[in-house]
Image (cartoon, rainbow, N blue to C red; front, side):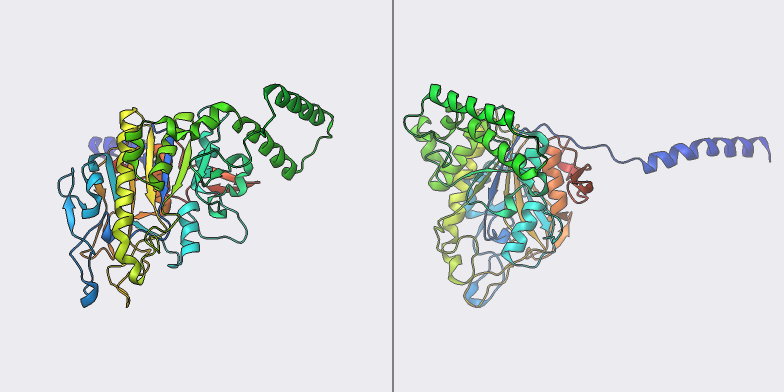
Length: 423
């Protein structure tokens, strides 16, 4: 071996361990600065081809697959949306329509709703926590005396805390004009009388034997949370009439008022708020637009457009948009073909979820589908990837494990964030 060969071999031997170590090292964690999530749930399944991923115009009478509406340009060059999203179109520089989301659950509402809330298929052995419960567990409430997780809609097991327990559960309400039922003090119970009751409860607890029964622990937790949430400071969150009339009107009807309440809850320190859209089926069928239900779908889209755009601008005016990640999801999308009644079926292999605000580097759209929005053409995003993006935006370690007893459970089932939205 000559001198050059010797040096080459020596340097190579010295570098190999470092190269191997670098190859084995995980990628640095992406970490955003968002502090809250407002999740808008479009139960029934928003049709991406009729909203945020428009394609050529179709015709249900001729069975010609395609969009039901015309498309319009947006504030982001090259990104178009449905004509009924005109207000949001002007704000797409603060928005990313993730057009390449997919999952492999059967196209059935209950199973797909579970997947889009827990990130996993239904299990017979593990009660997985919902996205809202994971955020509540990891970040807690921003201010003492408020719940970390509020559900503005009807309660459902898919929204629950699973193995994380009641501390990661939600507070729910269906009426935006008042606080949650059961938290208001009865008439005649003033502050002094309430204090005596709480002192009596504390004395009973001090004399109670120590227990390891988790059910009793959860019950005590519920009592403590109820006492905190019945305070005047938190219940004031529900006084929407304190807002200026033009702002309330700008949000629109029932759904818009839910979104306005969500903004108020963010200000009170709630970490995660889910807002359900169209609980009263203003078009007769909701987003599940089979058959003739599609004929009034534009009313749903316009309702979403008005409230979503108002929420973005309101948060921005209060300097809360970068701190608040808005997420718009449903259980799946809709195919480009029309069914026998002129509506659409279900499609889980390619659909759109929307992100706005949250300090992300928005681009109008991410991912691409084929010419009919039926198959993903570029940058696929699994549900775990989408969840990991939300966790990363919230500064949550998306690679960590949660624990069901002693059993480790990956927080996002191995998801990786959309790197293009960070940095």
